[in-house]
Image 1: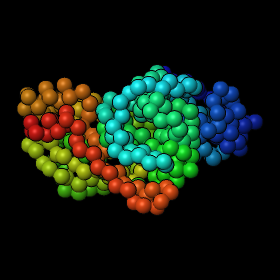
Image 2 (image 1 turned 90 degrees about the vertical axis):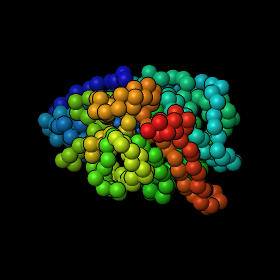
Image 3 (image 1 turned 45 degrees about the vertical axis):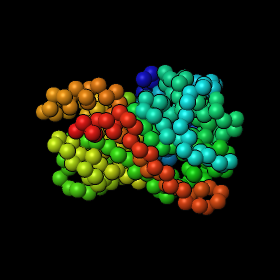
Image 4 (image 1 turned 120 degrees about the vertical axis):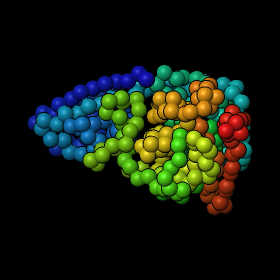
Amino acid sequence: MNTQAHLIEITPEATGTRLDAFLASRLNEISRTRVQRAIEDGDVLVNDRAVKASYRLKTGDRIEIDLPEPPPLDLLPEAIPLKILYEDSDLLVVDKPARLVVHPGAGIESGTLANALAYHFNRLSGAAGRIRPGIVHRIDKETSGLLVVAKNDVSHEKLSDQFRDRQVFKMYLALVYGHPAKARGDIEARIGRNPRNRTRMAVVSGGAGRAAYTSYEVAERFQEFSLLKVQIKTGRTHQIRVHLAHINHPVVADFVYGRGRENSVRAPAARQKIKSLGRHFLHSAQLAFTHPRTGERLEFASELPPELRSFIENL
């Protein structure tokens, strides 16, 4: 991932200035909104700690900034097939396949869900910007499953409010290595940028990062794996993968947060299938929210895609 790295030491004349205001004025090529998002995502550290955008600077503070390169300004419509489970005048629900990136970003300008949406739909919400038409929330590239897309700004705002207020139900299916000690469990651990590898997330301590809450229930146990139903109350980057790795049960075939764990699998055939799966075993299986205009509660389900279903059957 290409990044823009900055290291700034605060001098007396900047003392008392808000962090976001200082960075927006100092980094002319970056908007204040983008600065605030970077602070929330943990891409900005003050004295090696994540702080709020409202933090007041002190003389001698050391600011480390590691921002992804800005995405392209224009979105190219592309005739990428989409699986639409529901559509009306306000929104649509998409069943995203694995390996499809949700929207353009650093080093990715085409071949995304956003490019497909721009091709298939004349009007979508612009609340998230021109390169994210209708995008209310995201799931990782290798994660498959359900996403809601807003067709207008009013719907986008109301749906975003539901996500922020934790009124949206999301259930994922995750196959993990090993067997959790408890049939049900909650994980409360703050997530921020990995200080040793800024392209990854990690569980952080001492007030750094952002609060994150995950709960899981064991749906089925196999000889060396467990299938979990996972719910998240917050939507931090890579949250499920980071939290499950944190409790020593990383997602199967997650070679970012569970690299090397596949070598502990005793069955040679299973090890080979993990290496050839081509994605991690995480699927957004259920999604429920309140319709932003009618107030009706909508519920959707997505079955495991063929490659994951086949993997389970072979176990």
